[in-house]
Image 1 (tube, rainbow, N blue to C red):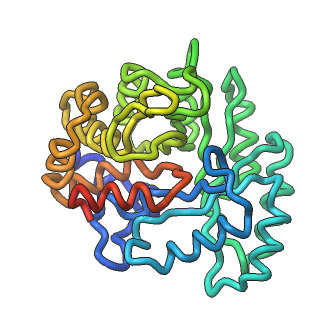
Image 2: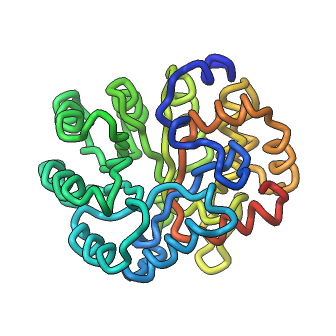
Amino acid sequence: MSYATSVSVVSSAVELTPPGPRGIPPLFARLVDDSALFPPGDAAMPEALRAHFASRESEHAGVLGVFLCQASRLPELITELIKIKPKQPLPLSLIIDTGLGGVPKAISIVESRSELLALRMVEMPAPSDVDEVWLERVSEFVPEDVIRVVEPRRGVGWLDGVRKVIEHGSWPKIRCGGQAGENFPSVDEVADFLAVVSGSTGASFKATNSLHRAVRHADPDTGFVHHGFLNLLVASARSLSGGDVRAALESTDAEALAEEARALSEQAAKAVRALFASYAAASFEQPVADMGELGLL
């Protein structure tokens, strides 16, 4: 799929990623979703919300996307928001940790507090066998104007699950790491995932976990090699233009990656973000700092 073809597709990813209010480049607008409540951050709800609203008032607020919260913690979230009294409803991605059957109740709770919450996404893990019946239930439970994000499990038949999710009109999610080595997909697995998504007209994906830094690196404490969000952006660009995706994913040359990202035209950047819609990060400050050091903001 070419840049021009990708841009011509009316994508909800583009709608979620307008230019930031302070001139944030299109490649980074609304890129970073706030997952402070999840490992490795595990922030308490009051602290997570205080930091989120502070980020929304910061110089780089245009980089910030939605706030992620588990369905099981909705009462806690609402209690804290009542205390905070936000000026605008909190853009929310609801993470389903109560099973598919709990989705209607969770969405009903969110919709009943529209003065506090604006539901943008519903994210959930897929069963080991992603079938049409399960995906139909997802569509029935989630309102049409809310983005459905489904995470197929990596393993045998994983890419078939990714294709089914796309064909059903949802975004597939790729988990890029975690607290164990097996949670980190290989470069080949990420490249194969990108090939499937970029080869599907109008498809978008979301990434999560361990994309703490802009560039691929080894964690000195665990030894795990982490993928970088800038690597993933450049790899997405190359997947649309026929470039070397694996080399982009493997690169540890921060300046070369940044230069390639800066060289993208506005049209190309929007096409990349129509594909790679956003990723979840436990810290907003770290990715913004990395972008700043590389001259990307």
